[in-house]
Structure formats: C-alpha cells, structure tokens
Amino acid sequence: MKVVVAYDGSKHAHKAIDQLQILNGPLDAVIVSVVRGPALGIRGTAVEVDQAEIDHARAALDKVAAELAARGVAARTRLAMGEPADVLVDIAEEEKAELIILGTRGLSLAKRIVMGSVSSNVLHHAPCAVLVVR
Image (cartoon, rainbow, N blue to C red; front, side, top):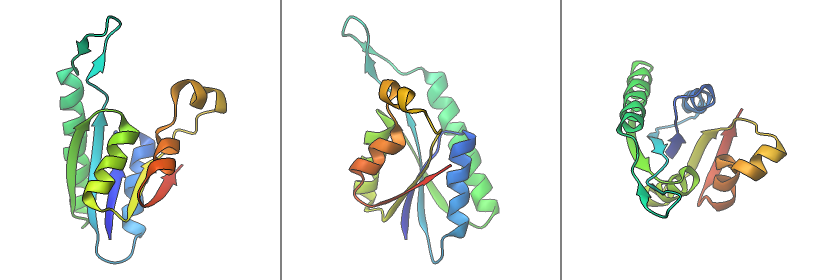
C-alpha cells in the first residue's frame, strides 16, 4: 500500500506516524514535511523561506525516518514548500497514493474559518482515502 504521511514534528503528526504500524501488508510510506512559502509580502514582492525552517523540517524528517527504521518500517522522506494541503494532495497524486494520513489540531470552528484547516482541505481534495488522526 502506498501511503503519504504529513509530518511537521508536532504531537499530532507523531500520532499520524504511529498509524503506519497498524496497517497490514507491505507499505510504501512517504513522509512529507511542508514548509510554507515562498509567499508574497505586503507589497507583493516574494518573501523567501527562512533557511532555519527548512533545516528544522529536514532534521525532523531525518529523525522520524530513523525512528521508523528502528521499528522496522521503511519510509522515504520528502521536504516540500508551499501551502501544506495543496502540496500533500499534489504529492499523493504524483505518488499514486492509496492513503493520506495526517494529524489534526482540533481547531474550533472560528479558528478554522480564520486560519483554514489543512486536514479539512486535504479531505475535500485528496485523490485517495484520508485518515485524520486526533
């Protein structure tokens, strides 16, 4: 089974990673970390992504890949930039994934309206099944 797992280093993302161990059969897991950006600044000029954010995301991916390997779960990692929901859907399509797993922070309705919800957007646009973990 081809699985894409969203990972940002949070406790909710760790819960998503833990779901890999309960899936049966051979897995082709891709752990994806998305750094927001590049974006447009207030004057419409491009704002570059902070290299420290990229380094932090890469370190988190390397760490979780090592943890999974120690548990006997082989996984590839991918670091991408952009809007997380869009990137996850694009990678799932590209990888021909059968499942996307991601955690949720459990935002209130008001916060979801203001901030948006990655899990909600992925649920509505994914090309495959989606497992949202709390």
